[in-house]
Length: 355
Image 1 (tube, rainbow, N blue to C red):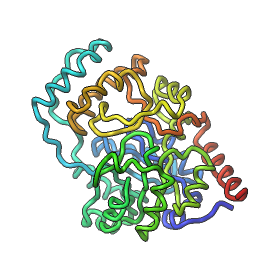
Image 2 (cartoon, rainbow, N blue to C red):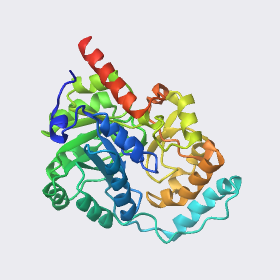
Image 3 (cartoon, rainbow, N blue to C red):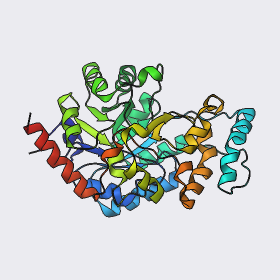
């Protein structure tokens, strides 16, 4: 019998396992529905797509499952691009564009989606849970979601962020350890000081807040889930382990890179998007690391590098892609999503009962 937690009771799911929201068409309807149908919780990444695409994606998921699902958005301010900084960023990126046969880059009319419009669609769709990264949602927006019957989860990389989310009314906190793949959620305090390993972060946040804590970062098997539960977490959020499932929309060069990677090959860098994120080290990262201080912030850099990363994926050039992955990448398995969930449950049960 897998242990029930406040997370399973709140969401009405069988297992306290959340599939992380990984943006960029990586976690599509097939994967999300398969995870939810297996008794865990699938999450749709809506942060980087327009409201109409969020609505369409959720509709497609709901055609495949009647189980609870989540939707994730970013907490962002409207970007204010510095023309000189943008020009310099384009100059730094041009050699990579040349290597891929792309024309010269140019400033963009839009650097991200309208977050207010995205939020209105989220209210309309009323998923079981809405999760947020990069900031804390104002109390009135949290209250609006809860009035629609949607639970709210905020991402925290330190205790101050967890307390801010609890004060805003969040139903649960996702504690993002430094091992986690892709973007860091830090929004309060020093970034370097917030690179806290999951083993140290979870019990600190558990002791600081009253709401359930969900552990994220480097969890790849049942041993990691069991460890998180023993540290006081009431669930886990797992990303990298689901990337190599056949249902994921992962481009072949990215998937092959993950299956060959070792844990020590991941690095945290802001050169891809303007915000620190963990991925497998490659030529793109090495080329621009020396000039990282000249790179504009998220979402400006993210929008400028988007065409490069898409072209690299299409050309089978992983050296110019953002190969997001956590430090547990060497433990990736090519299992169907439902089989992966069942395996995680079996491993967790074994780990908990061997103590």
